[in-house]
Image (tube, rainbow, N blue to C red; front, side, top):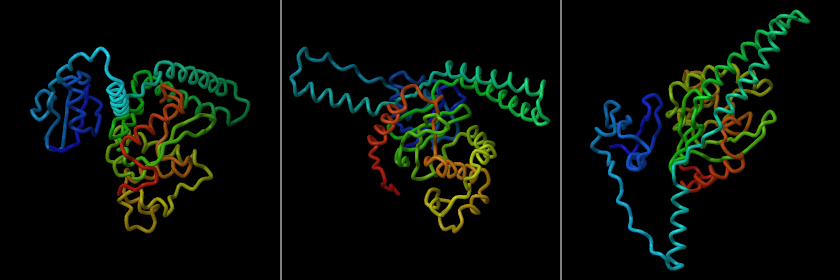
Length: 311
């Protein structure tokens, strides 16, 4: 079977790709139930893991007790091995979803009260229009707060890939496609940026829900990018294999439909911020600098050299 597997613990959100060894490890450690749905390209449909004979769910035998007083050489080797294993474990970043949701609700209520005041007691002819727009934004914030309350993770760091988990869906990108990770300030907030070498794997692994949300967000991005050209230049031709051989990426993107819009959205983010993917305050469970170091640790552990082109 293929080395790429996908699984769904709850039957609603899929995770992957992961290797067969990673999936078997989750099952063996009890982190994933045998009733979870799994799929690989050799299978016609999703099936419970317990029904897939190719998956080994056997729990490893427990090792014997450690010696009471290991020699210094053995102790040093054990510590080094443990450090390497920790660096390669699957890590889920779990933001303070409930706190963040309550902050968003407070902001929405404040904006909503101001909007209603503008509509009820306008000081100019345009105040009702502005008030209506702000009120609509406040309603969207309340809707987002509900989703934020239920979200458990914002990103997953696996030995071979980084998974982005948003309020509206998920996507995964292999570490070999991650060129750079860094922190920056935007509108007074610290955010984390991820710069990609290639868009192919990311666009292929976008969940349908996230792809639809990003496509709908294009008009807002164009407003945010006022004064900045949204048309990609020739420097973007190597980022997506579908642009190979074209002379004008701006015209070429229009012919690819929604997936072209998504590639254009990544390119616009790079032109505005210097990074293709970004994570904001609601995605963090630890200080920004610490999270950047953790991402870099996984990128380095995967054997990725900054500036190198794996293709």
